[in-house]
Image (cartoon, rainbow, N blue to C red; front, top):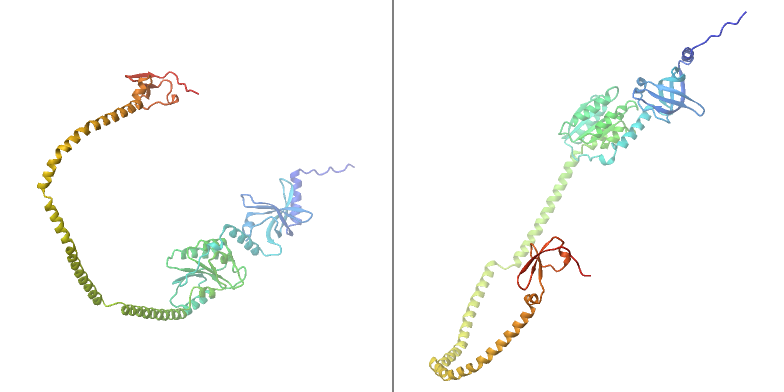
Length: 447
């Protein structure tokens, strides 16, 4: 009796049977491992390997499941996953199809918090240099919180008690649950459209980590960081920290503390103004008394204007008297000298001068006749000497000895160096008698 023929599978059939067997035997498994070889293509699906010390297995997190995670999957993250074992038939690889993933040892929200904090910090959203000081006396304050929560009640109570003149504008929003983050971000943008607001308070009362998570959402953090109006973050209790606290201009530990930071105690402020007013009035009165005393001293030290005028009038009279007396004294001295000079002129009158001049005229004429020829000969000799010197120095005398003066054409510049002209240039030679127009054929320079 012959044996039955063996069953022969195609590769596809065998792979399909293995996949069915694995999916039935391992329809729900929990696996712990470290993520490596992470790939996220444009489809949005997440592919990676789970490793331990000795082995690894491929895993896939489809886009629908990945989008629901509050954090980003990263290489090196140790996770606890739930899924089913299956086979990827085109390669014959077995893999885990995941339905759940959480970080090992810490919560998913904590991982998401650290990841977002690191990213925003790298972008500069938490830079202390961006933070603005709060106004010292805000007139209008915007409040973004739940319209029915205890936080709003605390803020209103504190502000009205400390500074009743401060006005509040409330923007009620949901502070937890689906859609809360978008409502908070929209309220921040809406508040920025009110130009009369001096500062914003964004916050809520205490709660669990999940309850406060809306204030860690990216949309809220970016809205606070981009706010034109300074923002105070007041989320939860003093020990609670959210990413909104780092993005805001000021972090208040509680909503009540935020209300105190924007509402100075009006009674104390009025009392302080009264004290400063009294001190200013005392200082002004003291300054007035001091300057009045200085004026009185100056008035006693200065003479009366009428007395000054009287002394100046007396001085003018005295100078006038001295001037008249001086003129009379001067005339008394000059008059005798003037009389003596007049008498001398009378003694040497024009008649006597003419008589003496008539006697001396022949003698002077004879002396002039003898002196003129001698002086004329001397001048002629000087003229001949100068003419000889000029003739020696004259360029014409040099030209008469066969030299010439070379000038450029046009321009008339005297040529002293052969290198000043080039072959083909026109020049003009000035001789003792006449000029020559020449064309330069070659230039040479003596060494």
